Length: 256
Image (cartoon, rainbow, N blue to C red; front, side, top):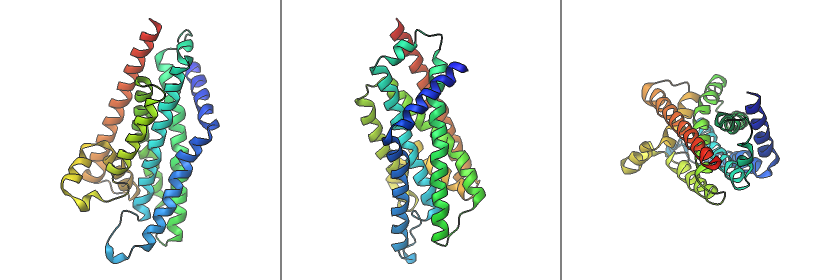
């Protein structure tokens, strides 16, 4: 456990010392939150567009922010591999579990703080716009969204292990774009229906957003909460397990 905490402390320090992490993981999502709130205020109520209402926008932006945790996890792991940092650590008594948890723990901690800030600003904006959010719903959604955080961080760990420090961030950027679009953060797939909705339902990003929104409303129905919870949890477990197996295999190959 001490070896894990040392690794986690080092990775936490690396992330907090990087100014880009504050820009992409916090500032950018908050700017989008403010801009889309202004857009929503400009939309006539007769249009019936609800995707930019704060009760939907807040959880959507929270999931959007999590995608950048994937990017920085992949970048951190791939840079450590490129600089032979991990290879040198392999000679220590630390095992693969220590390394994997050493990457996961600080990123999950950052995710909690990131989502807490986004929801705090969402609550303030909800008061300004005259549509106050439920404090209990905010807390429940904050806790539930850590499952999707684990999924995105697991993807980052997998990409960072498999690809170079140049390729991994580029692939994550593509996934950020796909995740924000097919996750229905900026548009309502339910109202569109058809092929677009079917495509969205094939990927876990759609369920991450749906899970965050339903938990914020304290709506625990089967289709809106339980099914997304099951799918996101299963994806998080499978991806993190797969990332751990690939990392362990790569570790043994590097030691050979």
